[in-house]
Length: 413
Image (cartoon, rainbow, N blue to C red):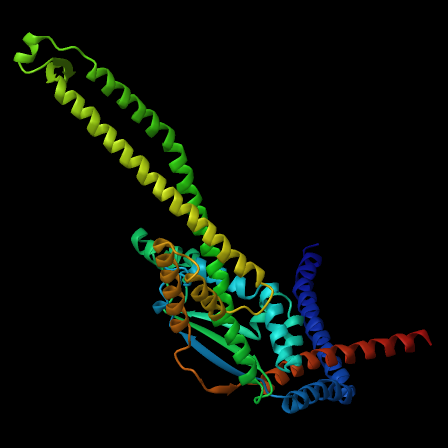
């Protein structure tokens, strides 16, 4: 009995070792089979993995080279407070990009390109899908870049004061990079795009700011209308009180004592004011109210005239919105409009607006008028290597697939 138990115990490790050795042997056999399959299908693997990257490299090598040119603008010197400038913070920068990449503006650029015989590039920008597609042809970048507050708040900056400074960070430079081909066309293409960015897009900014100013004027007029009734009512009350005070009869004994003494309460104490002084106080208040009413009326009329003028300016911009209307053309329109007004206030307003636009025109040019044109790297080696890696995986998979199909056919036969 004891001998049989010992035999059983001795047989257990032996069977375990045999099983492990068998598993290792089977794995070695499988690896050899895999290698034999790869060796058997080596020509298939070679062709499938080598031909595609060679073909891709051939196409990339002989494909036309793209070229790029970058224009740098000093946006920090463009102001941001007048009618024709944009504040170079992140919010206004995004609004500027939305306006430039809008379908309406891209159509204007495409039409202008066709007028200059650049039909192929016009088709490229028309086929580009949305902002991301257009950024491959026309890209913008601000320096310094706007910070990602969601990342900075967690990893770098925790001081609320510093976060507020970063939130109001303004750009100093703006780069516009234009990518096109062939090299002899990029100058013509960039001139059209530059004209749009430097002269057409600012008209949108002017229209938006003009509409904002007109809304402020309407709010001021509404405030004047609201105050007018109270001022006129107070004026009428003071005039009535003055007339009643003038009709007060003064006794002879009171005259000798310097006039009637009117009693009024100040801080819980009784004070007295002669009748003459009381009438003068009412008259002073009446004069003050009449001046306020006249001032408000003059301001109301001025704002009304500004609204009428703003309507003409807005109509000029809207009527030419579908064309390649530039800020220089709007400047010429304003210059011709000044002589039509006799009011000094309106002339001064137009003159101020003209100067603002002149400043925008002079500041809205790149730092370097003719920057260098660079060839864009095709990435032939990198792209060919990626194609080779993908082709190699496909060829290995195809080799095992073919071997599996062959074995299935052999078993079936």
